[in-house]
Image: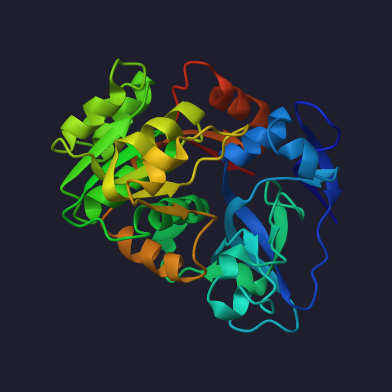
Length: 344
């Protein structure tokens, strides 16, 4: 049996729409008929063949890791999942046996493999995942948003690494993850939510998601502007969602002494820091965010989606075979987009 897929077949920019065999599942896996997928920033790195992708990927590879769909087959060793169940994929495939897995840190498993990066992914008509990495949905209303539980979970984990109720939160970078973080902070009782973004379209989306103020990173004295917007002392929590080196530097200078800095965005190169002044002497706490806490974050996602409307962040939808149009929208200089969805 053959399916169609978006496949990275050679080094360099681009990908191909090509037929490949439908995956044959192992005893502990399920086969999913993909209903929705969405494009992540890491997929842009793979498609454009830049940043970390050339040094990690083994080609050919079906990429894509934000995916949901209906179970069509369950391996003999699986439990609690049956054909017809609607699931979202947890993209961090953990072993369950290492020190990290056995101490509540499955998201940073020592033997971690990532769907669509280290193993074939979800930009296809069907995908196979370990049953332990499937989140079974109880309500059909999640079908159109199912692929977004994974990236929304990133924002939930990044925002709520510490509680934000009554806090002043600054979000640097208002791509889809940053926009989700704005919504999470607002729904979780933040006193004030400040966004930092240069793209007018995304500034407007941030307002819809609950930002009180959006500053332009190109303005003079950005750090002073963030501090003033947060009462003069600086932000209680800075969420760095862009990976831009200048945003990282400004974010570290914008967080108050004794505050919290969340590192989510992935820089394309090394970053220079004033380690003593911005970290040590200020006594700040830094959290590195890798995926989601499995599955604690997923339960928080389920609760928060009753209060956070993430639909404004979805701006485009394409047939999966038209993936080149989707990546062109995401790669445009104007960045007049939020989350881009793919439908087989």
